[in-house]
Amino acid sequence: MVSICNIPENVHNNLSAKVSNFIIDFKWRIPNSVEDAFPNLRQLAQQITLASDHTEDVLLWKHCNSGVLSLKEAFLFKNGPVQNLTWTKAIWGLDIPPSKSLLIWRLMHKKVPTDENLNSRGCSFPSMCSTCKSFTESSMHLFFECSFALKMWSWLASIINVQVTSIDDIWPIINRNWSPQCKVVVQACIINIIIVIWFVRNQARFQGKIVHWRSAINMVITSASISGNHTKQTSRINMLEFSIMKACRVNIKPPKAPIIREVMWSPPITSWIKINTYGAYVKNPIRASAGGIFRDEHCACLGCFAQFLGVGDALFAELSAAMSAIELAVSKGFFNVWMECDSQLVLQALR
Image 1: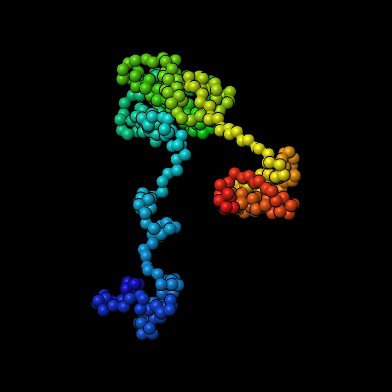
Image 2: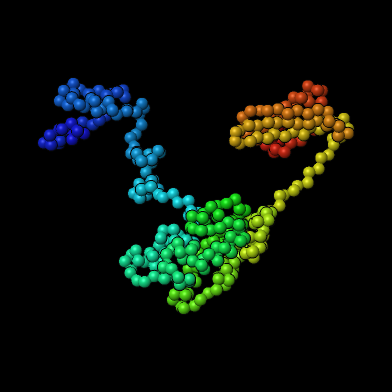
């Protein structure tokens, strides 16, 4: 404030007044002498919104809506906005070893030490693809255009009916509407194809060993089988998914069967009326309804009701159904009443 008002430095030590001295009844009260000395002070003060009650001043972090400086907010402020990479969830998962997902991460960030990337970092040397020995080695050629890689992707296309020609084709395939278990198998196949291609390249370049493409496919199937058989995810009945998992030697895990409970309904004793009530509601949008049915000792239906309750929860619906049933029973002259509902809270409320 002293710099805005151009207050000389030699009088700074004499400034003992506080801001609260110029606020009376939640309004600015600047003395005329001070306003004459600093004409722009009132204009600056009016830009500040005063509190309407007596609350303590707190420090607010203006870079978030809550105003609270948390460790997360400090980290985001220091490091800036985080990249929204949609492909990351497709490679990292509990069913894929992180060591294998790491190579895909490096490939996406152009960190795989192919001849192309090494040359871009100043390592100049003649380049040749170690698997086909016909073209210079680049990430695109090694993993997607080489004759060896084409055979690997053609095998995958034969079981999933989708052709892969570049790294961008991978993510729509993984994110298709597969069942959970089949998605793990497809994800494992794609990741392990890239892993095996890189393994075969290193074997040829550094060990002088040539791996046949059929052996490489068996390596992919073995890894995909381990991921698919050890996952806790379940599958569904689908011929395409069935053929994919059988090609990868994966045992299908059906979803858990629903729990079936046997419920027996017993008629009331002679001259009594049995009422069964039920209340239901949905969350979005919140709506509730209730209903009930009256039967005699011969199981004959004496009447029923259903009503829309509007906004309400499960207890409100169940309790409304019970209360409406009692009111209808009284209006019909049913005084020997046996009422059933599936809510313990309603039973406690009536007691």
